[in-house]
Image (cartoon, rainbow, N blue to C red; front, side, top):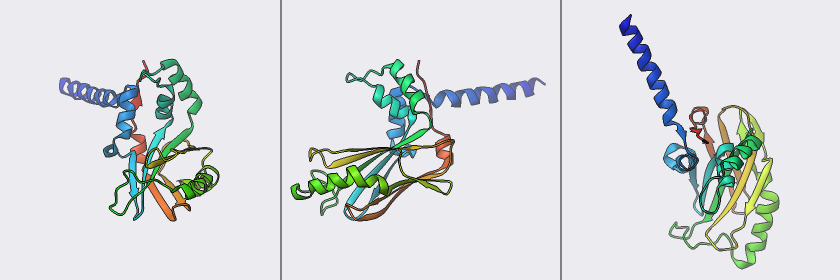
Length: 202
């Protein structure tokens, strides 16, 4: 009997320890998801382009919005935004054109003559070419924003939000018609989504 109780206590301790290990502060939560080794940030490279796809749960998006310029997270704003963003999964897609050596450093997405054409596509049309596939269903984003860097960095950024529920296998696909890259795809398994850390707010 004593041995059985000891085993039970050990199991309870193990479950508690694992739960605590995956409950992270806002800053640690963002760092964990932005570490590509954890599987929530992925890179797809073609001959001419480099795409980085960051999975952004509602909690992570709320942290980014609630973080002040001094790096301090406004906890009241954080909780409010989490409640408002529940039911959505976001993706931050960064795009950069590679040079002949394969580097993206200092390489602009478009020359001055092409800049207007690029902005028109990514601001007005690219959302139609971006889809999230879940359980056989394919949806365009309900939230979409293109961040034009005006040539100040080699990357341009798309933020897209999709309405989701539960943990399912999902794949983000992008037919980038501006860069002539027909199928950029990043998949996230149900298992990895179910292992997302918990967020400690207070």
